[in-house]
Image 1 (tube, rainbow, N blue to C red):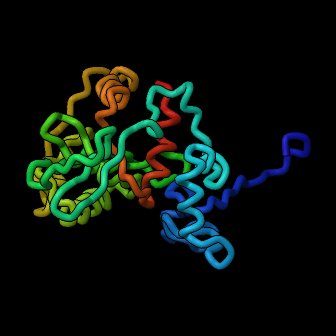
Image 2 (tube, rainbow, N blue to C red):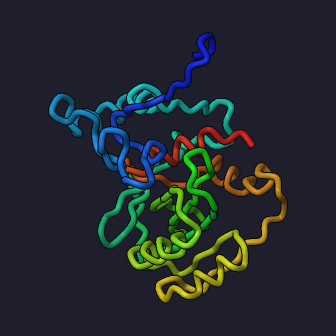
Length: 239
């Protein structure tokens, strides 16, 4: 293409469909898959793919998912974060001494929102990050939704998420007009506006970077449809 001047399109077919390849208009990728659906289950089953993911770790991400993350140059290294399991009545935190159970009633659910204002494929995505605040100040990452919404659609999508996650707190960056729109949605708790101390991304990320390095950010033990996208995004962050 560089020599001929002809246009081309770079396409990817990861083992599990990822959010980055989803067309916002259809909700599917180029071959009709939704997020998390396997590429060829008749030939390679989901069970086989999960075994490969567990065995190969970051190599699965780079090869099977076609999304290598250069963690050695990144400020976040999510493949080294500890993991948790949903035990029904409690969250099970995996560590060197086994599993520590934290009753769900002792964990406060909250949602952090970073708005984007374009549906174009190369634009930033709106991010809804659902976390569980542990008694010691650590965070369970319970869900991450990164999509491109029309401006008027964002608050409605957040309201749907709040109905299932039932957060005690919703915090967001954004314009006052967007906060007013969120206040019109009964399912969204009174939103708190975040006031960044700096426009520099690296300064705003310092606290999260420190928590990750201290192993105080927890990911699901068993990967979910959104975990690959999350690892790719944070693993690629260099400030």
